[in-house]
Length: 373
Ligand SMILES: *[C@@H]1O[C@H](CO)[C@@H](O)[C@H](O)[C@H]1NC(C)=O
Ligand SMILES: *[C@@H]1O[C@H](CO)[C@@H](O)[C@H](O)[C@H]1NC(C)=O
Ligand SMILES: *[C@@H]1O[C@H](CO)[C@@H](O)[C@H](O)[C@H]1NC(C)=O
Ligand SMILES: *[C@@H]1O[C@H](CO)[C@@H](O)[C@H](O)[C@H]1NC(C)=O
Ligand SMILES: *[C@@H]1O[C@H](CO)[C@@H](O)[C@H](O)[C@H]1NC(C)=O
Ligand SMILES: *[C@@H]1O[C@H](CO)[C@@H](O)[C@H](O)[C@H]1NC(C)=O
Ligand SMILES: *[C@@H]1O[C@H](CO)[C@@H](O)[C@H](O)[C@H]1NC(C)=O
Ligand SMILES: *[C@@H]1O[C@H](CO)[C@@H](O)[C@H](O)[C@H]1NC(C)=O
Ligand SMILES: *[C@@H]1O[C@H](CO)[C@@H](O)[C@H](O)[C@H]1NC(C)=O
Image 1 (cartoon, helix red, strand yellow):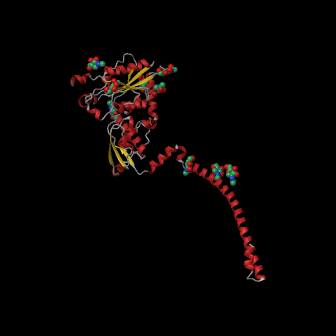
Image 2 (cartoon, rainbow, N blue to C red):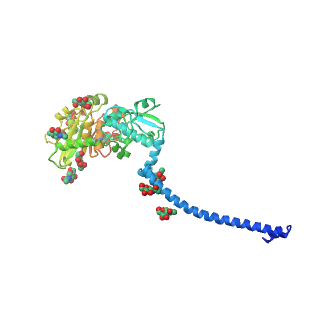
Image 3 (spheres, rainbow, N blue to C red):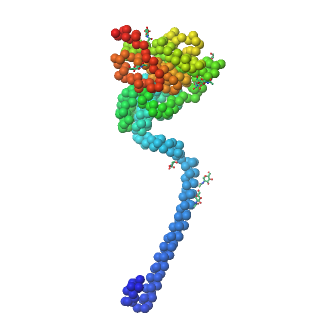
């Protein structure tokens, strides 16, 4: 400092030195005041900011409670991420409705699961909505018919069971085709599938009063839904598929299982061949009720009755499968109902069609073996 001052003092006179000193001093004080002020200001500002933060936090809370809906607060993290991904994907996926009630359910469930897996938004077509929404509280939106005609679809065939390649489908405009029903598509999200297929309340009320009606005085009944698929399968199975359908012996064995296991059992039978059932199902014990109307153009009623039972005896077909899946109790199904050479086995795998914990009873193929020695 002295060196510096002496450096300055040398060429200047006394007055000039005094002036320069004052100038320097005032510069230093100015800088000091600035620094001090800066510190003070920022301390104040800091407090102010804290206050501001508090206020805006309260405000934000108020606003978010009143005006906006924070999805992530009601969805789990993982759900929220996939929800966002699905909403921001530009894809539209759908599936061509094909076949009757059981097949439509299989198509819906497969579409739902595949779209979820690939994070695309799935829509159903009006034909599917018309049938399934009569029964269930579905959540997939329905695609308007005119929009459907304008989307540049890519057709995508689905096998009856889940394949590795379905986990990575990237196209944005997919229309699936096929008859996927297998649980291998969607059983990993069973809870959600069951939620998609939850009945409208008025149906549950109706069915329950119908079931209670037949067992009015008895408590703690175990209901077993029996679906006997006949109709076209009576000739299609042996003629086309080298297979058989359920016979009276199968139904007897299946009913014996439940009669032995549960104390007060009733069997609720629906069929599209109810006359055959009345002739071939032994109702002499008084525990068999032929409740279904078998109306194939209005299958929703029979379906609801069976699905509200506690356990299921199914024969063949996707209708029976879905009854069993929704009823959720014990399930007896007919298995090995085709000859090994059956072309049916190219499109159908027993292990992909029935859940491992269900109980299979092998079909009696003797009628086929006699015809095809
Ligand atoms: C901010 O809010 C907390 C409590 O939420 C309170 O203790 C604190 O004093 C507030 N700060 C200011 C600067 O108002
Ligand atoms: C938030 O809303 C409550 C009640 O509606 C109100 O009393 C409070 O003043 C609001 N807070 C702020 C910061 O607006
Ligand atoms: C919504 O809530 C989550 C979790 O509480 C939070 O992390 C996120 O910042 C919120 N988003 C908005 C926009 O408020
Ligand atoms: C209950 O049973 C009676 C007599 O069998 C019948 O008239 C009535 O319609 C039934 N009610 C229901 C809800 O099924
Ligand atoms: C009702 O029936 C079920 C199944 O048969 C049985 O497990 C249960 O103990 C019974 N409950 C009563 C109160 O009898
Ligand atoms: C079957 O259901 C259709 C559609 O609801 C109805 O028009 C028809 O009359 C029903 N048939 C019988 C035999 O009940
Ligand atoms: C059996 O099914 C009836 C009719 O849906 C239901 O009320 C009852 O709770 C079920 N019983 C059991 C043990 O699930
Ligand atoms: C059905 O056939 C398979 C293969 O031949 C056999 O492993 C299985 O035990 C059979 N199922 C029944 C219930 O007999
Ligand atoms: C299979 O069905 C034939 C009649 O078609 C019958 O004679 C035979 O006893 C049945 N076999 C079994 C194991 O039920």
